[in-house]
Image (cartoon, rainbow, N blue to C red; front, side, top):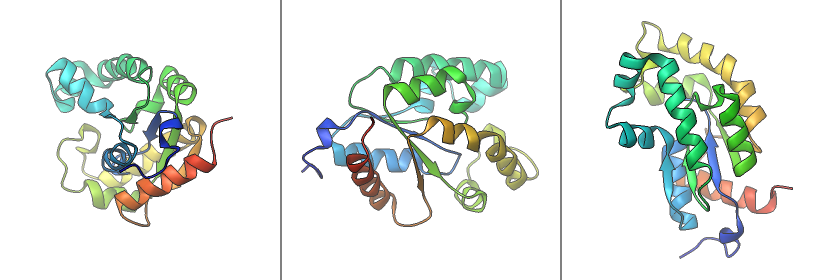
Length: 181
């Protein structure tokens, strides 16, 4: 059952934000509620290359990964009526910011660094967090990326209240009453 009768009229929804913001989890709930396909740009890169993100970082470096990410986002953002979760660093590319902002409705899932640390503490699949001080790394990343997330987004939604499904419902309601101009 669809949550809103106007859900089909909503544009594609693109989620941006830092590691641990819940882009994939919230995105899956959004897709379910809207009866749309869910795509994750990192998962799509892994599927297309047959390699994990950490392996790509190790063999090609961050620059190689970012090129793959840009090509993937260029293609995925052209698909109609989707929910797309992007990688935390997707906004580093001016091309990605353009594709995302101009081809759908972008939601920045804002998450404080302390919450990111809690959510990513046991995750060994994040190359940028393989450091002695993950909290300092997350803080440094947020300082660089937060302005880019805000520049790209049409809306900023904090993630520290409610479940992922409740957050998805809140996003649908917000986007329904605050459409793109």
